[in-house]
Length: 86
Image (cartoon, rainbow, N blue to C red):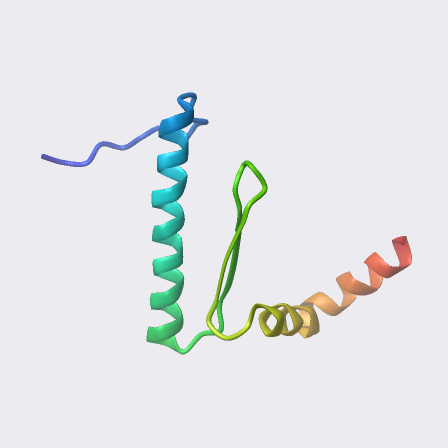
C-alpha cells in the first residue's frame, strides 16, 4: 500500500482537524528535537492552536532563542523600523 498525496486545504471535520493538528504538532516537535540533537543547533518552535493555546519547544531556553534572534544582524534593522513606527 502506498501513501496518497493529500490536497492541502482546511479540514472541515472538527474532530479530524484536532487529531491532525495533534499528530502533526508532535511530528514537528520530534523533528525539531532531532535537528537540535544531531546538528547541535539552537532551536525554538512555537505553535498556537486554533483556540489560542501555546505549545513550545526550545533546545535551550525559549527566551535565549528569541534574544539571539533579535540580536542577529539581519534582524537589527527590522527592530529599529518597528520602534520608529510605534
